[in-house]
Length: 376
Ligand code: SF4
Ligand code: SF4
Image (cartoon, rainbow, N blue to C red; front, side, top):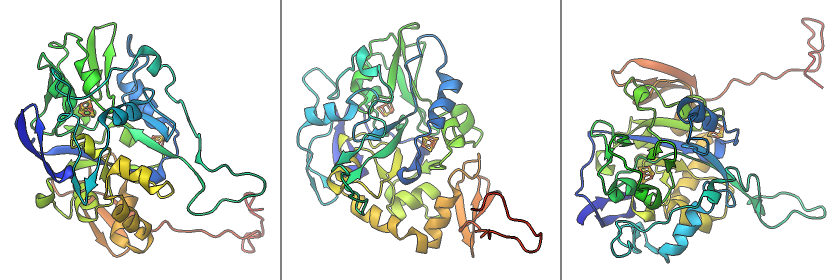
């Protein structure tokens, strides 16, 4: 085991291999508040990558309603229970990561789902938690009843448990962009990766006898294009790009700005120790203890900043850039009421108004002498 730095838990930790960061790390920010669970992302991925034999049950991208939705069943709660208490002291995690809590002879604490756990991909959809709304009660803020949609892909972790656990060395992290891939020629289907990945984002293909996973649409990344699930996202909740270490954060880089500068986007279960590279703007209307467990102690600051986004033109403008172009935006700059996005060569690829223009229609248009049909 090696001692490696994990900035997300504010300390060093044990990992199977020495620290070896890629030249640049593929990363993403998902704004949970904008997801409408239309599953267009899920289908965009499915039709691109997993429509073959043996892949029927695979959802490299899935969207689940939290707290009762899972794919596979209980993926998070089963591991959290196994791991035991997960205390933080300020921004430092004092509990054990899944590498530090590994059982004798294992490289990470994990569990392998049974076939039945994959049987209901959209279990718990729209199920509310919290108090029931009964007999004339009305909705209030914070909501008595709550749920939110959590879109999930492979996190292309800095310290992947799938990679650490593979006895064949079949899983590798690309030095050029940090994307984590399974070498199909080397894999012998031992499924140690399926057991070790806490996010359950490696899937075994019984037809080929190998494990398969999200590949971040790397042929598109190589052309500076966003993956399929990003491009097709109806809610425009997704931003693809590259993240740096906190001390090397570039304030003009969209991901660095959201993660390191404004700290409005947080990793999923950072306490597990993988330094995942998909970051979430947490939902506004869910109980804080639940969100703290899911996104770590930064959740208070993230929500406070996000709540003020409407009066914060840089943040509002950057959020408006999400999903506005297929190109990956490497730099952004605001000029007045317009936000501009630039590619890796500094060329402008998109510009968006920070505030959408509002058209107020009246019930009668005197200039044309007509009543617009969609006004009641
Ligand atoms: S999310 Fe799972 S499959 Fe993806 S890199 Fe991390 S450990 Fe591996
Ligand atoms: S396409 Fe976008 S809005 Fe629709 S479910 Fe996926 S992440 Fe959510």
